Image (cartoon, rainbow, N blue to C red; front, side):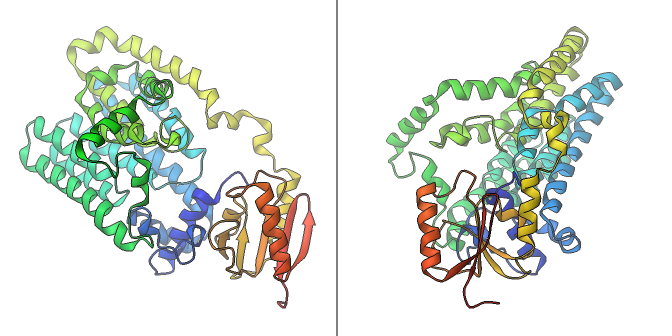
Length: 427
């Protein structure tokens, strides 16, 4: 019960809709809210067959772990061919334990999980001069998320620079056009608001050309310490060698929109935002080590630095929990929660607090308690009053509970901080 409605619950409702043969509807974001009006991620439909067999949020979490694991293979194989077994194993292990992947695994599920192996395959092919293969691996990024078309375009630009105009232009033009269509046409046409909501994260959205440039530069200068720490953490596991390869330029689009945003969550090193950057910097490092002039001089030192940095960073990110006893125990309070969940029949409608929602999305219609139109009545309300309240504060939450009781909801269970209400008149 450490997962959240935003994002595991949202993505499960998306995949569940696909598995039922429907376009994705996400009740956690609003009544009958179309997920394609929030992010353009139709690649999530590929999880529908697995979810049909095993309807559980665990399908998403296992799939994400598997996709990250798959991304290790191209990097390790490339390193093995040009550097040998020990460097390859060192690089593979350091990448697999890297903080960007750990942060993503430690915070729910995200569509970016599909981008990680695609980028790994594309950049490893590009580094070995396999331009057609690189372009083809980059094209599915257009189905992962709307901003990744620009990343595909960056890969296309590198392919052109390295000498293959045909496949480079194909990736560059396809990527650029896809991002423009998705951000300015497809998502607004699907969204209830009629616009791409995330443009509001950028101060320059409604400004003129000159002012936009000024505001974008100004945004980059906000919180320089946080952004510098993120860049340092990104490059340190590779002993900063990634800066010596043109492959590192593929990270520029993602870093640009993150640092130009006024949302502080994008600037730091938490959550899933850096997962797609990890295969880029590791591929760039391998590219540098492949060069004959650098291979013997700095290879040993680089591997030592890589192991040292990985070991130093590892305890500060979620994988450290694997070595803590409490991680392997189920708290008694969680057992109580699951006993209460069983009182809610399959197929019913539930309004749940943030961390309880993903426990119910596989078998009920779940909305987020305190979000959106509170007048929409579900049959059940379940709230964890012992935990910090989101998206409302505790005072607002208590008022909503009183309002629910005034509207006819009755207490079914109140135990260990969990409150289960049922609308009167239902058996």
